Length: 460
Image: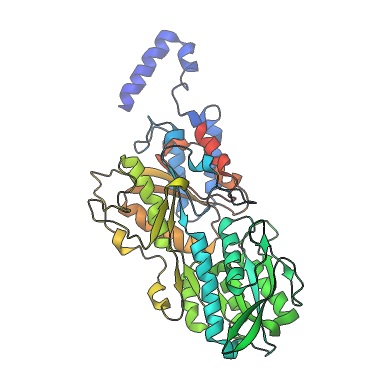
């Protein structure tokens, strides 16, 4: 076929001379129009420093071009299946969903988890622990159950929900604009902060004050949020200032929670509660880590790729999700929910405590009900561009991506994994220089406001 194309091109060149040379790019992929070679070169340079194992895929992708056999060359980039995952397109100040991004085309969806359900579950888990261990949890016997809170990203819907969930359960929340205030308070050892209030718990006829002693966004000097090292430093500062008053540590995720646990709370027998059910956090429950929340990453990762597979196959979007596929893959209603008006799939959360943590020790094991291999003759290999917003994020890199890599084989998808720096959107978008070589896209933004940075590339 390539030889035939070359012969045809030579014939046209002989007949039309230089005019034919000038028209040679007119049929190329739209995304690369005037600067394809420069973009491809930049793409290779940017990707060369990425995670081990990505380099070869990225170089192959740059060299193949839009005519790659696995790519849908006859489908415009703007019409290809797109899944936003982990970070839902939304206004970072108000939380309002970006329905323009969620409805980018008829095959656009979001995959995440039920943030509010999970947040309430985490708050309830902390409250239940306090009540069950009230006789030993008030370490200095002052009648005040003091906790500190590690906030991941003040502009992230999931982080906001988790902060609200803790404050709601412990009675420390203060209403702001019709919902619980999720702002960090700095230090509040005297209970004078206005963004929170003192709550109370009564156990065995005795009342205890519950106070948020301190909270802050764990953002490092380079601008990366959800930063574990910053959380470790924060607990060092807090413990040196009012350590005897700290009875509980709550964190918006396990990465920060484990940093605080290892830096201080483990040695001081202070229960720490996180979120994500990362393998190291689950294992640490045996050593005193209070608990965590599984957001069913196994279900999320499957949904992320399954939605793309269904769109690429042109079958009902519910195939292999709520309706069994020909291999028998299907999810039960107790592990996910689909909200059609939001075009979003949400995995449901499970509390992981000392009672059940042994069931969650391997966070990268794929979910058995959806583990059956698809027949490649009926579901031919397709090429997918997928990015992780921060290659250093503990949950995404050690749990989510390994799960995706297990499922991509099951679903016959050839996925290029791109790792970002967690700080700038351009670090990722610069490596989507030629979307024409891909059949579908799975996008994990740095900031939830920035969907247009990606859709603009697909609209070219």
